[in-house]
Image 1 (cartoon, rainbow, N blue to C red):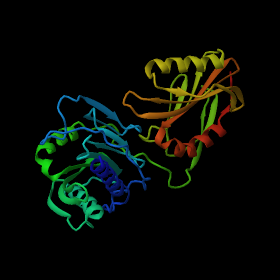
Image 2 (cartoon, rainbow, N blue to C red):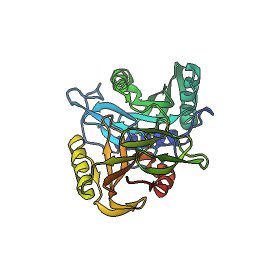
Image 3 (tube, rainbow, N blue to C red):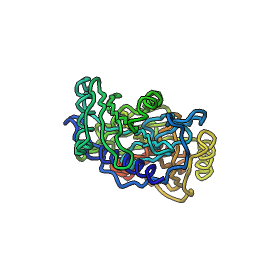
Length: 351
């Protein structure tokens, strides 16, 4: 048990270090500095002499909580999510592990650049080990050896793959004596990686330039950042920023009880996403209209975790429904836009 737990902790510590501080090409943004993670004790399982991934244990799917990716892994492996994003899966015997981490890039990387990124990832974070030795590096893949004080020599593979504006690093680590038997199964696991988000979520770099948007047909006006796209339909106006998932909308509905309207919206959401959660519906006012507000969390059909807030209030024989929504991971950043838009919203005509 001591050896099993030691390997889990060493792998996670090294993977966290690699994800948080690896030297990467200048066109890759390093992941945020992670926090320390302590793994739960490994299960006590007696393996066969030549097996790490056990047959007939079943498979289960892991969905990244922020909607970045999904992957299939053995049902009896331990899952350790990473504070900086990504995940580590650990074999119950403590002799093999697999990790996924990602970071944004602002350009298309060549195969050589991806290989360099994987090599720097390995060398910067494992190169201080006297036993560290690169075995091969090509096509975005680096294999190397290093030494574990409890388990002896391990074989590692790091692969860098670009998906749109994101570069994913996958890491396989196995004790040397089991590499040949285990690597094909780990590669099959890597092949199940399904990337859901390929764009880097934009964040504010400078104060936005605000412009006034007025919709005479809907009788509303509000400030919107000049780089946001605004579209209008017969009963709604929507403002969105690029492909970030951030959205501000004002909808005009038939007159009805505002509190019941929001409850109906929540009931409909619960049918499409049973795991959705929400706050209590509370009294509020926006744009000179009094009504009710509710905050809620839900997942899109692509398993992207979203945070949203809806307001509904009656004025001049109309129900105004105001909604803000953004991926949960960037919602606090999105408030830099949403708050000025909400504060500036006015019902300029209710006729």
